[in-house]
Image (cartoon, rainbow, N blue to C red):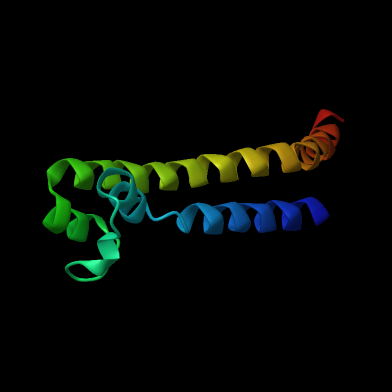
Length: 101
């Protein structure tokens, strides 16, 4: 039970931290030395990056935003697999023993 709570907390924490990365702001700062939130709608999303800086920065922003979502899911899967592997192995062993009798 403790491992399940640890896995949930670690997964939530890493997803929160990855979600706090604003690729629209990163792209605008790296390429244009400007903050995209100061222009257009004031959002750091792909649409405002597209309207303010063009297609290439918008594509890079989209790839970054989708990529951080994929990384969050894969990291969550890794955390659950590594922390719960012993629990799952014990559960499988307990289930198999009565079946083999």
